[in-house]
Length: 84
Image: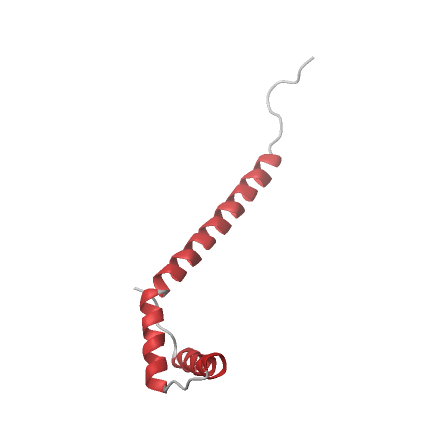
């Protein structure tokens, strides 16, 4: 389940949608219509964005682990009997 937007976040997005419609399309969109658009975007677009965030985080963690592995390998010291 995707997390929902906090009230402040949702209010901000609704205002931005209303602003977009007014400035870019010359249309007024009411708060209810903007809220419904937000809900649609969250339901339909949200999972794609969420999954992309997870994918990006996974790649970052894999890179960090690879760097850590290289750092640890650089700490190894030769062992065994010295060669003559």
